[in-house]
Length: 530
Image 1 (tube, rainbow, N blue to C red):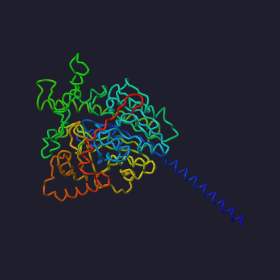
Image 2: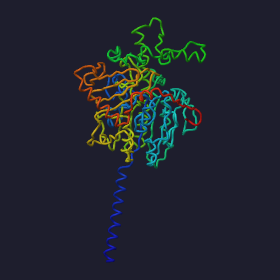
Image 3: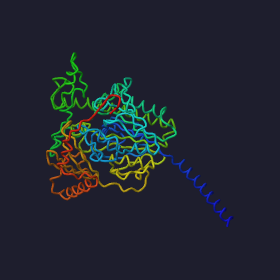
Image 4: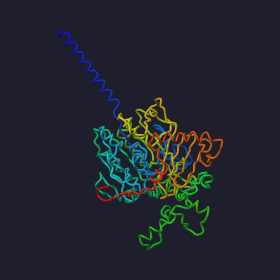
């Protein structure tokens, strides 16, 4: 019996040792991936040339395209609330705005940094985490081993002389570089010199550009010497779309002098310069030259706007290229997930607009491309319906970190690695902020990719239905068309289902109360970074 017991013990020890060696080999082959999450602000799909949209030939983005060429380009990624802060909060938490508590920029308070976020979960799993660049959530970043975020100009940051808070306490004014170049410099410095190389890292690399007022690095001023094309809906009259007709984001009527770089007269006092610059915000007429009127003035404003916007994009693209080069030169590219996205889309003259907010495609849809050479095949395209709340669970899943049950987003890891995947059949949207800044009516809606149904509910009761396959520019509201009655009914049923699923099934009065709530935001630009 002693001999048999000893033999059994020896066998078990050998088995355990063998399994340990196999496990070690498996871990070495499948190291936890590093993550570089790159996000710009207000970057439209049409201004990412990998999508081959209407601006792709005149405004290439070769470095962002590198990510798409080396990985997967997602064609149907959408926002849950198309405005800067709420989108960022949704991305961090994997939850809709009404659940994470940050549902509007203006008078909606600040982000609750004590709640669960995906950077905290990465940090708890042994990752070194960092966020560098734009934050725009009011409270200091939490869940990061290192942070350096812009806090001036209401949390937006500025293109020149941006003010940063480092690690929640040290205020730094950066005067040497344009903000895009500064963020790139800081991110590369952290990767090269300051991170703990014994740990995997998760870096959020985030730019102010190309956000208003679209002030590019002077090195790009020579781009776009020739006039750029107009979108086919540039002169939309908003027929059949009441909410759209009441907007305040028209290039013709709602851009100010600062937007279009019209210098103020000399000898004005600071308060006078401020007043001069903002003329146009509320629809006040102005022209740089009395001979420039009507359609010619609208065209001039558009060209000034779109060229500066795309010059800002060029700066972002350069910074993306610097990051990709660094990863390749330091042998980090094979085991690093690199994502490029924006906090939402943007209007580049579609419907005669700038800005975002609407559930219409140019602002609702987001660019999203991802590479991970050891897992994701190169040059793949994907048309699955995705939401920004899906980013957090997907990144956790890719890193082997358990996804919390209370996250409302869904992992699309299987789609990335080529496995069978049951994607969602519709995406749900809800926007709250009104009337400041651009008088976009609060609305919710659903899109299946084929049809979209929107309900504007604040001080009007208007529904809009669009057949996206036959009317991709969303010019024809089919809600009252009897031929679409059954489609309307099925989409209204889908809205009810998703509102229950996402816990957004409150009454219209309760939704209106969220728009009306006034909670002062706190942007303390001193040493505490709150």
